[in-house]
Length: 463
Image 1 (cartoon, rainbow, N blue to C red):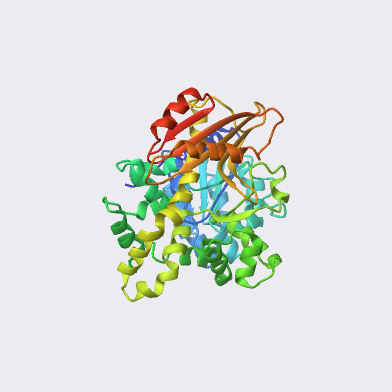
Image 2: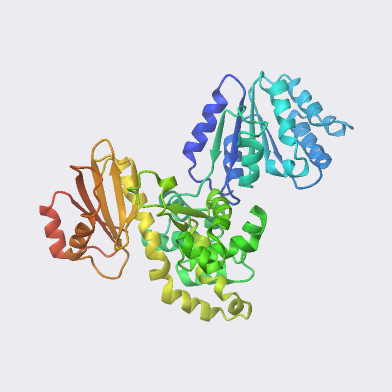
């Protein structure tokens, strides 16, 4: 049996919805492989529940499957033999069964039903209003096609708008939570694994590691028979139309084009034509838009940069996609050597910065660093960049941090360089500044001595 990892907040929310006296309708959505079904199955354990996985077949075939699920739940094989019935008839059977506990009804891959019948959300709305709402039921609608889930279950124009009592957009695991998949490996080894497969549960499950990271990359990603070899292709084919356009945009970002103008120029298209594609990729949690953390109105900022938000897809577009020809010719050794020469400087060092930001927030949450921050991110201008800047509105705290994933210890010059860059970042008139240095290899003796005398400097060796 697969180990279920974390998702405690999501489970707590679902349990709270279940304990409500009235009926509840919850929408769970997010990209494929993110663990929606695993979350639902964990939640409905030991509860009276009808779990129905919708297929891409015709609607009447899905009605047959749903009848079977209901018959099994009610332990009544006669239900499956009913002919000429529709959704309303089956729900009438459920409601009239007089079950003494709250029943959970799950429609997984809900978007498949909306594909075969664009009016299906209206069907569910009617069933909810006329049959379920005034009894003791919990209806869960779950789906992967983010755009379709928003259109049919979440948007203002959806027939279900105003009916739902809650929603969960499932996201990738953080470094700390993802580590539970590889509890036996060291933090340093897991920085590499997390940099390569990220926080998507399915990718973490499929990546088998036995001590040699390059052998693991070769067997789990570069092998043409492996699950991950063509995963980004399958993912985009399932989630979007115009796969080629999305591929080109992701490839451009992976090559280092982060400004909208750079992406447009590299693809020889107008910037205005990219907006809808980038918005879809952000909805799918594949791409993120970052602005300097000090920007007051991030949505309106013209300084936004685009980054790939999925470590595996970033890795794949940097180190697999450009070398598919070599891999098809079984020249795997050439690709592995290329990865060895570039992976730390071109990939892991950037993921390490994000990991350090997560660690900082964890240390604040556990009060090991006793300050309050409203937000944490990066800062840059035309001349310089700071890996970590955290802002505490209520306390006037501003945190400045640098993250060094290198083979040498960090010396005192790194602190003074950071302090000089920080002079350009004025958030509050009388801000309380704190400096944090993260280092893979530790710190020089003189920096350690200096830190003992400097109250607003924290040194963190990680891992």
